Amino acid sequence: MKFRNIIWWVLALGVGYIVYFSVSTKKRMETVGIIIHPSGQSFAGSARCATCHADIYKSHLATAHFRTSAIADRATIKGSFNPDSNAFVFNTHDRMVMEARDSGLFQVGYTDQRLRGAQSFDIVIGSGTKGQTYLHWFDNNLVQLPISYYTPNDSWSSSPGYPTDRFVINRPVPAPCLNCHSTYFKTTYKMNALPEFDRSQVIYGIDCERCHGPGMQHVLNQEKGTARKDIKDIINASQLSRRQQLDACAQCHSGINTSLKPPFTFFPGDSLAMDVASFQRYDTTATAEVHGNQYGMLAASQCFIKSEMTCSTCHNPHEKERGNIASFSARCMNCHQQGHEKVCALSGKPGQAVNGQCPDCHMPVRPSRKIAFKVANGEQKAELARTHFISIYPEQSRKIVASIKQLATH
Ligand code: HEC
Ligand code: HEC
Ligand code: HEC
Ligand code: HEC
Ligand code: HEC
Ligand code: HEC
Ligand code: HEC
Image (cartoon, rainbow, N blue to C red; front, side, top):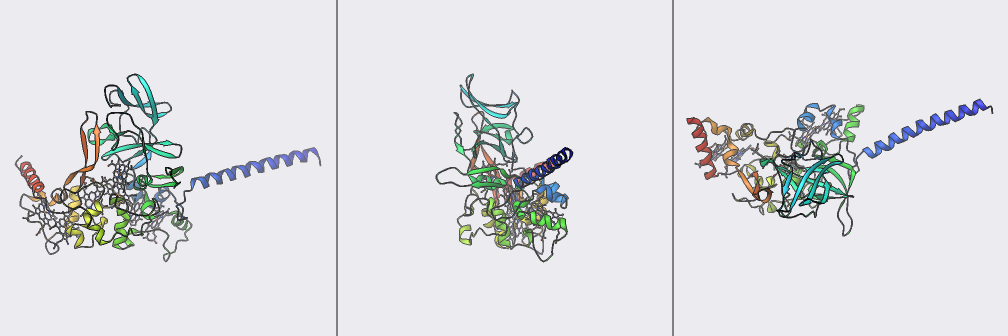
């Protein structure tokens, strides 16, 4: 073989090797990139849904669901790193300072001037509607950081469950916490050990595929144009039974009384197998615990018992609707108007304003007994939550009537 030919062979092999290498690297990267649900179905990621469902995708980005967990950075952490407002004081010697360093964002403990330790903010939990708490990776485990953020005061607070007068960092994050606050974390269980999470197999936020199931097959079928009307490749909640629709929300919205299934295995369409008897265990009095149990409270209400309502009767899961009480009231009126269900005895009396304020009197905001944040001056702030036990609250109604009348005379 002539020398020139050898050169060609070497070159050809070399190019071939480079081509092979880059193709296989790309494949490997794609394989690492694909997240597979324990059922064997693959997630596509909501960015892929955007090409065809642009409107839903866009409005969903603003929801508390989408923003309920994220990688921690200056944009997702709501608390301040400015020197005048970046400390939480435990006692006259100990304090925690939130520091933005070149290497990342940290909660740094000091006793007087002595550095006690620094843990990075790695994950944000909570949209910040009411507050946020932060998680830190220890190898493949997660631990909750001692300092949280309390939205009504726009200040740092101690994390619920942590002491407020001294340094401690000892609250490992259990899988159910992530199950309610994200789409997916690949989780491994070991005997007598903390659950381990695979940080390359995580989907932050409660995204399309948490409510519609992993969507890769649907995306591929639609992209290739091979979708068949008679084969369902994605779950549409509106075609499920009432029970199934309710359970798809109740898996996260019925407090701690829920699913016996391991985290991240519940599929929309599954049943939580909560029978009528277990509804009755819910405390539905006006003083019941309001945090996180919208399902239990609603299920005890006359509206729910005497109609076929689901959560979607009042909520559009693709939109941020918080604060729009008039539009919620319009949904009450879909049933409560002349010729349909009972009408409000007060309606029209203190003025038309009543018609746009149904939830203010019949679903008042109540303080939680379980969830409280301690802010810097030692004050205890209970979380405020909207009761879903729809009922008549005479005292609350008197207050609202008074405020409507006051507004009318001004
Ligand atoms: C290439 C375009 C395309 C992409 C990408 C896409 N879809 Fe669709 N999707 C469609 C079309 C078209 C329909 C209507 C199909 C029908 O009615 O048979 C549809 C229907 C649906 C439905 C209703 C199904 C039903 O049976 O009524 C849901 C839910 C849905 N898509 C969710 C998603 C999610 C979640 C993603 C991302 C994981 C996604 N789609 C990505 C094109 C797409
Ligand atoms: C995977 C768990 C999960 C599922 C499933 C889920 N939610 Fe949520 N939902 C949450 C969490 C967590 C929050 C609080 C998010 C935050 O503010 O950080 C929330 C918040 C909300 C809010 C308050 C929104 C706001 O603007 O503050 C509404 C309303 C709501 N969910 C309704 C629903 C409905 C209806 C369904 C079923 C279609 C549903 N959720 C399914 C976990 C879930
Ligand atoms: C919290 C749960 C939840 C999330 C998150 C969610 N959906 Fe839905 N989606 C539903 C429910 C419930 C329905 C049925 C609503 C009804 O009963 O009318 C639905 C209906 C749909 C439909 C069919 C009906 C319609 O409105 O066109 C499509 C398409 C859809 N969703 C796409 C998406 C996409 C894309 C995303 C992410 C950007 C997403 N959904 C996120 C719960 C969710
Ligand atoms: C059974 C489901 C569930 C579990 C488990 C759960 N949460 Fe939540 N969480 C919710 C729901 C639902 C809301 C919002 C509705 C409410 O306040 O009733 C919420 C609200 C929050 C908020 C306030 C978000 C905001 O801005 O409004 C934070 C912070 C939070 N949870 C942190 C955690 C942490 C940390 C854990 C685990 C140690 C945890 N949650 C476990 C369902 C859950
Ligand atoms: C899907 C239809 C439907 C919707 C939507 C609805 N309700 Fe009802 N509601 C009913 C039915 C049915 C009853 C029982 C009437 C009866 O006893 O004859 C009821 C009863 C009530 C009662 C009396 C409760 C009691 O314990 O005596 C109040 C108050 C009420 N609803 C307020 C509301 C408010 C406020 C909204 C909106 C936030 C609302 N409803 C939305 C169907 C509905
Ligand atoms: C200012 C407070 C207030 C507002 C706002 C309000 N209600 Fe009421 N509602 C009451 C009170 C108080 C009663 C009990 C009246 C009585 O029994 O004399 C009541 C009674 C009811 C009942 C039971 C009627 C019956 O015959 O048993 C229904 C249903 C109802 N309201 C629905 C609504 C709807 C729907 C809206 C919004 C259009 C609304 N309410 C707005 C205070 C209010
Ligand atoms: C009859 C109407 C109605 C139904 C049905 C309903 N909700 Fe609500 N929900 C409301 C209203 C009104 C608010 C207050 C919205 C606001 O403050 O802007 C609310 C608020 C919420 C919030 C925020 C709670 C807080 O304390 O800030 C969550 C979470 C929620 N709903 C979940 C659900 C779930 C899950 C279901 C089904 C089990 C459901 N809702 C059914 C009317 C309803």
